[in-house]
Amino acid sequence: MESHSTPQHRLGALRRRLLRRRTFWQVILAVGFLGGIGFVASLGSVPAAPEQGPAKVVQTRQLLDQFSAAFESAAQRVNPSVVPIFAEQTQEVTNPFASQNDPFRQFFGDDFFNRFFGAPQGEMKQKVHSLGSGVIMSADGYILTNNHVVDGADKLWVTLENKKRYSAHVVGRDPQSDVAVIKIEAQGLMPAAIGNSDSVHVGQWVIAVGNPFQLMHTVTAGIISARGRSSMNLADYEDFIQTDASINPGNSGGALADLEGRIIGINTAILNPNGSGGNVGIGFAIPINMARSVMDALIADGKVTRGFLGLLPQDVNEDLEKALKLPSDTGALVGDVTAGGPAAKAGIERGDVILTFNGRPVENSTALRTMVAEAKPGSDARVTVLRDGKEKTLTVALGERPEVASAGDERSGESSSSGSTHAGMKVQELRSDLAQRLGYEGDKGVLVVEVTPGGPADEAGIRSGDLIERADQKQIESVHDLQRVLKEHKSGDTIALLVRRKENTFFTALQVS
Image (cartoon, rainbow, N blue to C red; front, side):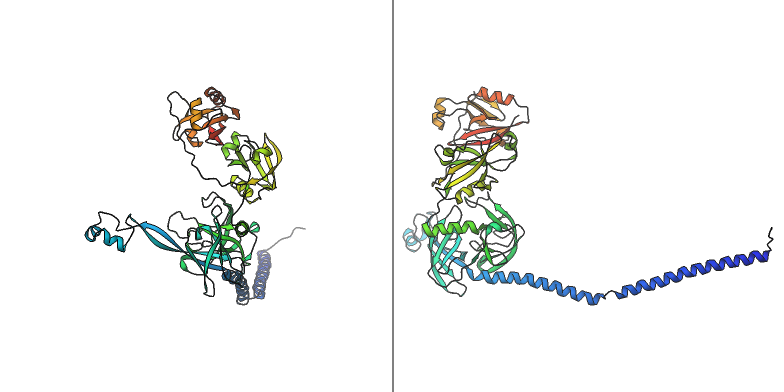
């Protein structure tokens, strides 16, 4: 049935639809409004910031108080065991009135100046005072310090925390490790608590206690920045702990301690690139395990005896690693072996790479020297070497390191226009007269007579007067032999050379040009 709508009917339908839509949006707005009220209410149910803030502040303060208390406790434990060491030394200095052209001398005459100022030869004696630090190691007065604090001193004094002053005498010194032991005649002292320097970690908090710039019992704080620092040219045997705890002149011989108040090092030196003498955040301490071992030997025997392998170790750099086809740059490369020495008797050969010593990994030549030095002479050591790509473990009966006077490596080379130039160096045959004059009798090789500054040979550390014995692990007996080896490689290749310099040999990497 067809429906008919009038304008009135259509208007009523439209009103009804609008009413339904208005009701719909009213409901939506109402729900949204109520939801908003609920959200705000829910915010109101969270604990107010003023109530939560103080709780967090209290907790933070408690943590900081605990942190501060750790430093305070460590300082209180260490301070009584660290003492200032005063040294007096007599030195000769130039007499300012010694010159015969000095107008005052000419006016008053030599007799007047010699009577009142002495030193007619231009030198006069002057007393010099210095200050260092030390760590009390026993209740009866043994004190550990640096060798450079007491070296050359005519008189030594130590002042305890109670202001009592004692005269001290040197028990023993070891310049090679920069460790010394002195003693005062006292009883009932408070010895330091000793930690284990082998167990410290990079990033660990530490304190340094000493007497910088005559500011007695100064405590500074920092972290351990690195371990095993060597090649600093501060001592013959270096295995330093690096720290950013402030160390300054007067701190030498003082304590580096952990937050338990245990001594883990003896503060020794600072890195001072600008020459100001002040701290730049890089200081070094002798590990207490090493220092205590030296101290025990000095107290017992008055000297330190060290193990001896009888070889010349060197580091493996990237070029040598490539030239010798080694798996890595770790280990100590044997550049030379002392004839008849402990290493030679055990079968260690030139070109071996020492990987471990008594089970301990050998990182480089410095690490090996330290390990051998710490070993007891006469004891057996297990040495693992890499030879021809294979590992081999040998047993070495260690000797006692002899006292060897230092000697320079320089020698005069033989210049000759008849030499042959290769890779920035001029070489020639080793004649018998040259071999005798340069100490190469019985050796085979070619003699380096000239090195071009900045050339490949110069970069490899080769000097005039060196004898090249092997190249690319091949025996070199003539200039022709060296030429042949070099021609086997293209420009830019790196080869290993075995070079003799005086009584020692060493490996170096040469870039073929």
